[in-house]
Length: 293
Ligand code: ADP
Ligand code: MG
Image (cartoon, rainbow, N blue to C red; front, side, top):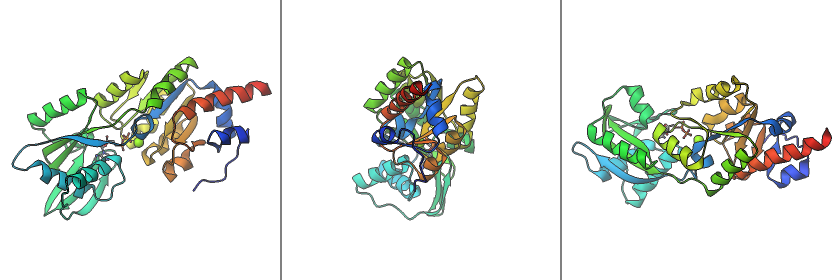
């Protein structure tokens, strides 16, 4: 549900799919120093696909894929969707899972046949303080070099398999970074994903600053870090995890259909899921407020 929207320059903004909830934010947009983008689903398509699987111990690929899909249950995370699609593509039956628990910014956990199964990223391994078999470490390094996200499956807290997931940078993202640089705006990226993946995507796009492996509860602190350098900062994101950072930013921008939480936390909502609208917004702000001076 989108709350009451106050629009300045209504027809122009609306024609560009921009809903302005805070006109001060729209006015400030012309003076932005830095724009921080959420990575997954904003700069990338967020349509992750499993491209590789490795198992250690005596368990085969299909078995870990069906386990992962079961444990991801009805999680809305894009990684969960990728796991379920992979299981479906392989026409696998998923076992029964119980006691689902989401571990925010880390992964998920559930019980299958009396065993605790975790599925999650590097943050999860750090959190559980578990040793990783060297085959899985080597697999993760290779995946990282290819900018693929690595997700581990743990049985009773022992890592027994890993998945490599590939996402695709959106064509528009290249134009966005170039256009913002032309406007003298610094571009940053904020993600819960690994350093490897984040830096590969950032290098590809020419992004200036990278914050990776950031837990959901710490995302707003990265905004503050930049603000403490005296910068006027906008944050662009779509997820529940992005809400505190959207609130903290001088200008919070929710993009796409977004989650309700992201939309409620934002000053400006970009209705179409197109990051180029961020550039249009800055240009519109510059054009509108120049005239009024
Ligand atoms: P993002 O910045 O990509 O939106 P999140 O905070 O949602 O990141 O997640 C951070 C990391 O936590 C992911 O890259 C992944 O490693 C792990 N993770 C989160 N949710 C899940 C899930 N449902 N299944 C597997 N891994 C997950
Ligand atoms: Mg996200």
